[in-house]
Length: 413
Ligand SMILES: Cc1cc2nc3c(=O)[nH]c(=O)nc-3n(C[C@H](O)[C@H](O)[C@H](O)COP(=O)(O)OP(=O)(O)OC[C@H]3O[C@@H](n4cnc5c(N)ncnc54)[C@H](O)[C@@H]3O)c2cc1C
Image 1 (cartoon, helix red, strand yellow):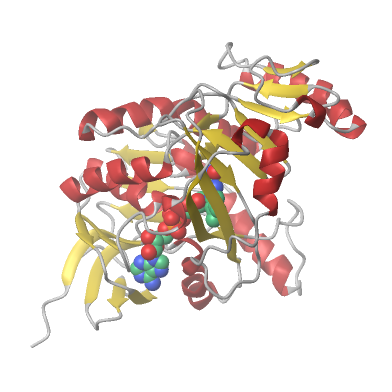
Image 2: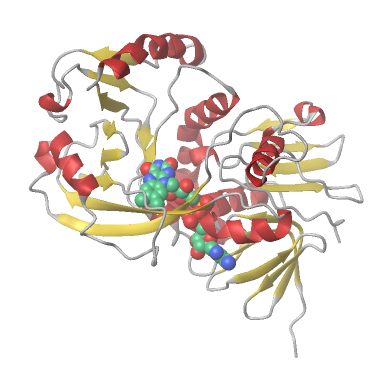
């Protein structure tokens, strides 16, 4: 006999950083929440090695940069809450980032970035800086020959231990929500608020959040008819270095060198649009590692502890902010859809409740629970998802503001 359909306020597909963070926020708001993962939470891209939390460059400021800035600034507080709740460290530290200046072109951009930091960063956080350092790295970490024109240093970047963070988040979510590990979601029926699993079970929810990483794209294609993005495989390694955990992130053109609390140093990463097995490490593909050895010669002899591969969602950059004209190409229609997701609805601004931009890499941004309107919603952006619910009204409407959105439009049971 088939079991009765379980009912929740929110069902979340995928237990990576986005799914777990949203689950935590939903349960904190009193919503019954079920998170479903095909394996164990933390097994996707979020369970990697790097953990770089790097801001956009502070010049040419826009809404997206402001959004990320707010998230990065409030993150320490959110992480402290998570650690206090679970007793588990997330390995977070605001170490800053250095970037070697190797070309005149880069050097010419620096004054504009410094001006941008003065205006956009320092206004709300006076201690933040974006500096050009002429001369060798005083820590002796970045190779001098790699930085012939000096290096930039900014102190907004931070690093976090991805697996430790996932362990803490998982512990928090397991204590608050229903977690169904080892359950693959086969389809999502947004109209009827149903999540159907591969083992022929189903979950009913007022709102459905798609947080399956790059594996969200087929669901989104089904729901919107639009090909929004694809998976990109990445590889990284972790080395046993015993380096000073206060050392800043070294970043240069896609190569990262990040010292973590345990003295281990993570190095990344590749970016492979074509692959057969997303999780198969390929040590032949070690150009990023050799580049890291050039940047930071001290890690050259460090033993490799682990080689990791995984895939993350990637979307080609949207073309422009202008709306696509009628009869536009599929890519234009996709871009227009994305822009619509980013646009705020006027009524969202007046919501009462608390503003919560403090989540990793732009996860759950707002949480509103306006008692007068009886409306609550969780919103995320950039590879994020959306869940919305009218607590008292007969309909559920999706809130704008996410890149990847999947919402049930069904009234609450
Ligand atoms: C090599 C590499 C290095 C990176 N480094 C950084 C970095 O330094 N800083 C940074 O900010 N970002 C980094 N990223 C990107 C970052 O890891 C991702 O953007 C982020 O982890 C995505 O989180 P997510 O929750 O969307 O997806 P994921 O973490 O991939 O989680 C998706 C979850 O959904 C589950 N799932 C998938 N399909 C289904 C289904 N059908 N049914 C049920 N469950 C399903 C999976 O099992 C998984 O647990 C890196 C990515 C890679 C590949």
